[in-house]
Amino acid sequence: MNESNQNNAQQPRDPYASPPPAEQPPIQQQPVQQQPPSAGPHDPYPSQQYNTPPPPPGNSGKSVGALVLGIISVLLTFFAFTFLLGILGILTGIVAVILGVMARKEIQASQGAIGGSSMATAGLVLGIIGLIINLIVVVACVACAGLLSSQPGWEYDWSWDF
Image 1 (cartoon, rainbow, N blue to C red):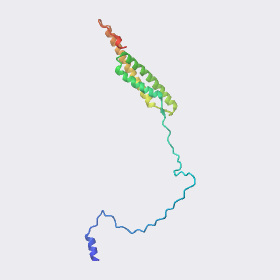
Image 2: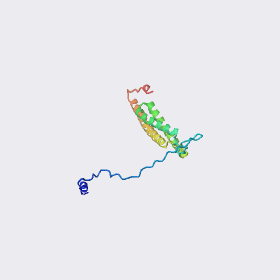
Image 3: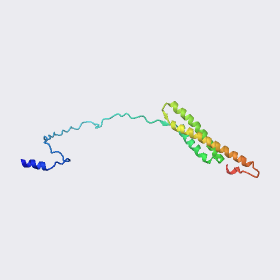
Image 4: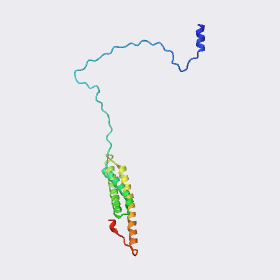
């Protein structure tokens, strides 16, 4: 016995080794019982009722129209030096502002049944920006053309613009 104690003392125990197995009682298996098939149709998955959230509110068509026309009005500011595109930019800006105001009123009156308030606001802002810039550019171009046409020897050909 003295030798076995010396062997245990000489061999250091591995700190990562698994503990020695403990004696466990034998597992008793129970027989599997099968149920006889039922006579009628049987639903293995009973129906469950889920609480699905309501669908999100649809966007107002006026808010979408205001946003689209506001974007077009701002894009037409790059071509406002041509008289017709400048006038078209002014008209789309006016319509965008009107649709934006109408859409905001409609959305507020619906009390959450209709969405698109942010689009209506963006269309309103873009319509105002496009309207103002197009007005400034068209008025400046007309004034510049009027000034140049008053100079002696200057003839402006308006036919290319129409």
